[in-house]
Length: 372
Ligand code: PLP
Image (cartoon, rainbow, N blue to C red; front, side):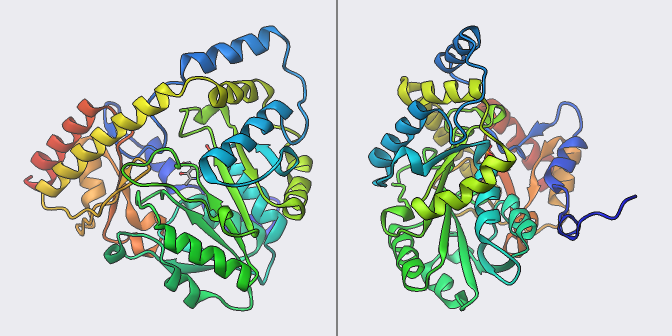
């Protein structure tokens, strides 16, 4: 084999994916990170129409202008972020936005603060940029929320960036406004970048979402259509940042991606401008399932914290063999340690599965794993 670049040697292929590949047929999958709903019909129609209209050419590198204009409106109305179409880039999912942002700003010697536990892709994109990961504890006693005081303690003169993710994958935690604001203030005082992954923004219960970019100019705000509109496979995300920051990220985007998929961009435009009922119904259904899974886990004696968003619960389960025993009994879950050392002793369960399947999965765990 030809010797690979040193940056790829730091990357381990996703353990979660490997586990799914090994899943027994018929197992109930609570490991999954995508909505089980289908793309709303109006979005499908818009994409079909765009193909018939031959809207299948390259789009502007930053994305279709009308889509970027709608994204600007969305940022203003939902997040209190003032931006303009020039400072919006439509990306190939939030994943590309994360990759392009870290490539544009992080280099060897830079420290990047990373919540522990957090989504696996963050570690990979920081490693690919050559940056050094500095974990910041999200403690169960704080309901896994990232706290500004814990962030402040880790800042050095090498701190280049922090990644925020609220609501969080894997814990479902939603950060408090005061912490977001305090970290935003720190980013201005200490001159570092906030990469704020807000992809689960709309999947939130009884709590309000706050964007760091409302309080600081040093923020790249990342969002996308995968979770809110169940458009995972269509691969559309977006970001906004100030003039100078956007330009640097654009250099990476333009020279790696050219533009996001044209048909999927027409779907994204419809998603933002069309009716939002299906989003509201989906979130209401997620809330019912959240209540069910939390109740059942608590009844089995597993402690959970207040999961206020996304579609994950992160119960404390100290039996190291739980994930294996559950898989053998036909329920797929993910070991919390996969998301960082603070995930040790926890299991991530996704409730992006039907109410009936979650009930069935909880019955199986109760009968065959807890009492088995
Ligand atoms: N950010 C978080 C926290 C996620 O959980 C995911 C997907 O699971 C992504 C980003 C990737 O989203 P996209 O499909 O837009 O690339």
